Every structure is written in C-alpha cells, then in structure tokens.
Image 1 (tube, rainbow, N blue to C red):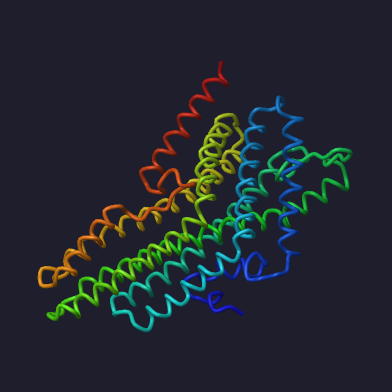
Image 2: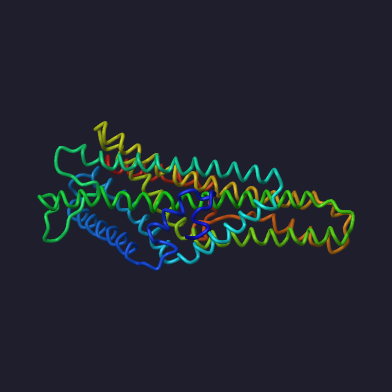
Length: 375
C-alpha cells in the first residue's frame, strides 16, 4: 500500500483511483472495462443522434449534452491512464512535502494545514452528495417519459435497444456501471486538483512566513536563509509546472465543452414544459457550473497568493544584507511579478475573470440559438 493513498490531505479521492486500478497498478483489466463501457455507450449515442436528429429538438439538445459529458469523462480517463506515473510522482512528492511541514512547520502553518484537512473532508462529502444528486437526476430522466427511454439513449446496428431483453440489459448497464464510472472518474479527478491547488497556496504561505522570519544580523546567515527560500520557491514553481502538465489538456476541453454544455442545457430548458424534466435540467446546469466554477476559483487563489511572495521578499531586511543579498531579493521580486497561473491548454489562465467570460459567452450562444429556433 502506498503512503500517499492514506494521506489525510486527499481523503478518499486518491484511494478511488488506486482501487479502480487507474494509478499505482499494472493490471489493465479494470482500465479496459472502464474504457470499454464508455466507448460502447458513446458509439450507441452517436448512432442514435444521427437517426433522430430532426425528430425532437429538445431531446436532441439533451443528447448533445450527454455526448459532451461522456466525451469529457473519456478524456479524463485517458489522461489518468496515459499519465499514471506522473500522477504517482506528484502524489509521492506532495506526501513527502506534507510530512516535512508536519515536522518542521511553524504553529500557524500547522494550524492552516489542519484547516485544509477539514476542508478536504468537507469537499469529499460534498462530492458524494453531488454524485448522489447527479445519479438521481440521471435515473429520473428516463423515468419521466411514458415510453421506454434509457439514461443515455443508444441505438446499435442489428439491435433494437428498446425491445426486451436488450432494453433491460442496457438500462442496467447504464445504471449499475456507466453512471458510477462517470461519477468516480469525474468528481475525484476534479477534487484531486482542487486539493493540490489548496496545498500550493499553503506552500506559498509557508514560503512567505519563512521570508518574513529572516531577521538575522549576520549578512552571510541572512543570505543563506534567503537562498533556502529561493530553493523553496523553485519547488513550488515545479509543483505548479507538474500540475500544468497534468491538468492543461483537461482544462482546455473543460473550457471548450463546458461552454457548449451550458448553452445546450439552457436551450433544453427553454424547450420543455415538463416540471420533472426542468428539475433534472436545473440539476445538470448547477452541477456543471459548480464543477468549472470551483476549479477556476481555487486556481485563481493560487495565482493571487503567488504574487504575495514579492511583498514577503521586500519585507526582508535586505537593506542590511550584502550586494548579493540585494540582487537575490530583486530577482525574486521580479520573478513574482508574473503570477503562477494554471492554464487551459496553455491558452487561457484559469481565473475568475475568464470564468465570468465563459458564462457570458455561453449565454450569448444560448440567446443566438434560441433566436434561430424561433424563426
């Protein structure tokens, strides 16, 4: 059993991927089964969309949302499988870092660390509630129709998926296998990065504390302590670079797909009158908005805290140091003028400003789509 699997910081989130065999495992059986069910469902959904494209625009819009959601889940599954070793190295690095802070951190940082653990536990519980809500909404969706309907409407060549026993078989597969697969991949995946962002903020606060505690009157000692802070800063930057490598692709698709999903869901809500379907649609809208909103919020906190390092460096008694000390302070302040930002595909920083822009663009496309449908 790995040490990072039981790290309080990640609660149950890393354990989920270890148990599923997506990381820390050489057994490809579970990975193959998870991938297979996603691929089979995606193929059936695409075939159904081609056959029913002009029948019901409201139903078509919901099918597009399901296609985008399953595509995003498949992308996350591919990232976990392809970059499993990088995830393991990241968890091992944070586990060692976490233990070092426990052993050597000052009381204020240790208190903050305990607070992060409590927030992590709450975040994990919130994930369970969201998963239950999403699963219930997904189950209620087909039950809201008077005719036979799957959670994800599928059709396959040479098979009538709405006739017994195929209908019951696909329905059970989607309820007992597909829904848990989507939820256990998407939500813990998001939580892991939110928690890592939070740990990055903690590391930056720890760095600021170390800088402000440099008060030695000996020039050489002061310079040595400041150089140790520079090494610590590089370590934080390396952590963020690793995060960028792991989340950048997902962030790009999250950015691209979320705008379309929100637009499609709003359009779906504008096309239906059934109260049950409206409630299901509102649950999906809330879930999707929450997932990208909280991701951008935590990434924004990391960028904001990284700028504070410059103020902490300036607060050191650099004026009492030698010339090398002053050069080091100047270089660190200059480096910190550019915040540490996690980007979506290397294109757009993940911050609250861009999140607001995504919401505005999604609503603009929804208004355009609604106007075209009424003509």
